[in-house]
Length: 247
Ligand code: NAI
Image 1 (cartoon, rainbow, N blue to C red):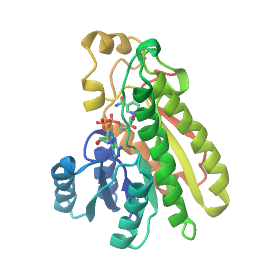
Image 2: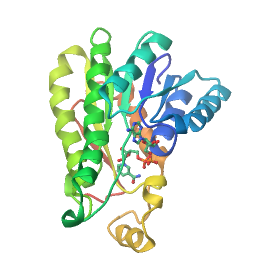
Image 3: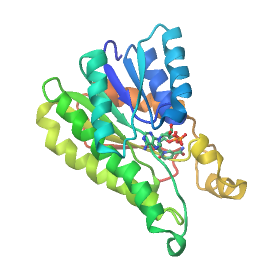
Image 4: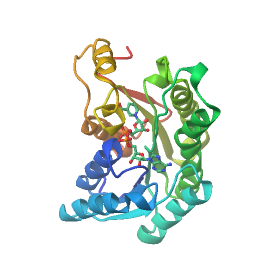
């Protein structure tokens, strides 16, 4: 479904980003694995090796998406390696959960810098590179950005911002055949959610009608749909993948 497409997935050494990279590669895409610092180079190289073992093409590029110059370098590096960019998945994200009265300005700012400014940085340079060819940009938001969540005001604000950003940019680029959509996962089992205490997980489970947590591949399948021509008439949309959690 993505044969010969070139895809950049930010934050793709593990979790949802990694699953998206693997799924895209299986669908024939050439994939750029992005990691945030040299500490993660080994993990990134491992994902590249796995994709190559499947017969796919992949490279790994280091860039902190919160840094505008590094985000620009990520897009430039992709074009240097593969000659174009068709798909950008803004997946990189962090949490720094805290109740508002105890949250520091640093905790608020850092989450906004990665989760929202990172999406701005990569989209700006990515969309510029897609202007002649068209493309698909997929932003990772969250059901928390729709409904809010106590203890996550920084994260929810960043993810709500991603939704507004997605719809605005979708309107700006619709005439250029660049589609911009978002995926809003519910509770997906990854390193990000593994750190939560059992009592929090049990409480979340009570709010999920399907009575199970999601897995990264269930997000990746929707990313394949949004990246491919199967969704050719969809832009500015937010697709919840949450077992009914935010109905
Ligand atoms: P994760 O923590 O397993 O993976 C996040 C990835 O982003 C890591 O590879 C990390 O190194 C990378 N990253 C962090 N800061 C970065 C930066 N400045 N530059 C480049 N890469 C950076 O998390 P997970 O669960 O895979 O989440 C992926 C996305 O899905 C995130 O945007 C997250 O907010 C979102 N999401 C996850 C949910 C879940 O239940 N796991 C629910 C809703 C949204």
